[in-house]
Length: 462
Image (cartoon, rainbow, N blue to C red; front, top):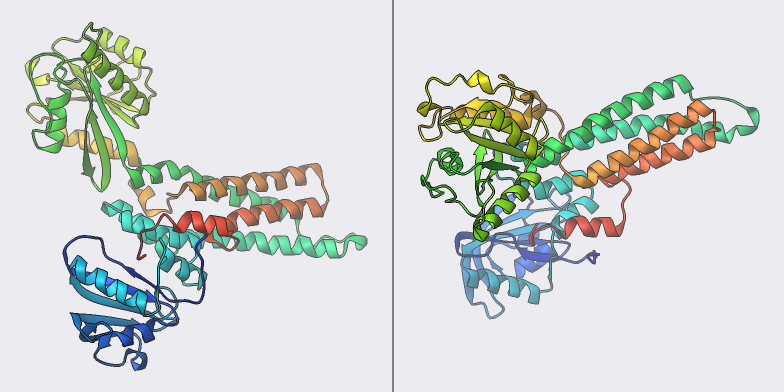
């Protein structure tokens, strides 16, 4: 566990390497004193918060290290809730390192990973769910992941949890009151209203937990495997999607012998496309390794694009290939490729069994980019389903899902207790358990080990 004291911490808050600007951040009771001692300009101990000052950064010998701009924030109106000073220097690694060492000599301590945000949590500037969302915000790579993280940083998810928790607390208080009057056999908590409340809260929890699959995909990206027999056009499709010649394309079957992966953002969602070796029986030992890797990627992929060369593949053959792969209905899209070479083919001949015209089959020509944009739309809707889902609260953190599921189990135990007529003290115990799990999400109840696990995943300086 990070040693949190009333000391002053310092860190370089910008990424390593050359840059125009580098930022050094101080936070703690001695931040203003330390900053003033090495700043040639106004006495920072006497300035107001939310002010910006220009001057020089100088060492103990009064040698000038750099010209800097200093931002001053006075607690509790700062990110950490403490006095915070940020030096914006030129982004020279030498300048930043020298400035950091200077402030350490002045009495600051090097901050640990995530310690600034941990102090913000401990000082009541944000709850635990919001603090975790800060890491997601930093890691966001697209509009959707950024939007989800911002909603959580601004307390959207926390607000829903707080509302559920408060309703449970109100009922728990009535049941606890009953226990105080146990000898008088009184009932303050209406059991029918409690039952209705439990069903409603469990419904909200189910909605939140079911959103995790989407949230996890939006946060980490969608593993999308391009598979099929040799020469079906898999590499051509990858190049068409990326709009560049990423994979080698040849008329010789078996050109691709290993997996090739590339990322592409479609409407704000990251897809990791994996081009695989053609699936066939072969005596070539190198190619057979590629085929095995292709099958492994198919088993792991969230989505599979199964490429079909319509000039050489019949509907019956395709049906046999799909059955051998045993793909679930919602995991694959069949692409009827090279339609331009077989203009008299009726694509509807391939609409059988799992394949439907409206769902997971698309005629196309990867070489001519026919229906490539339509494929991107299919991929987006295969992941998101209803775009209105993106406006709702989406759970992206596995710790939160675990806590929600444990809370739901406790609430289910309360319902079973009501059905069997158990005494109020057992009902109160299960409600307390549910409250405990809900509170662990926002940090209303937390442990040192939990905080250490969360904040040590942050970068230094945050």
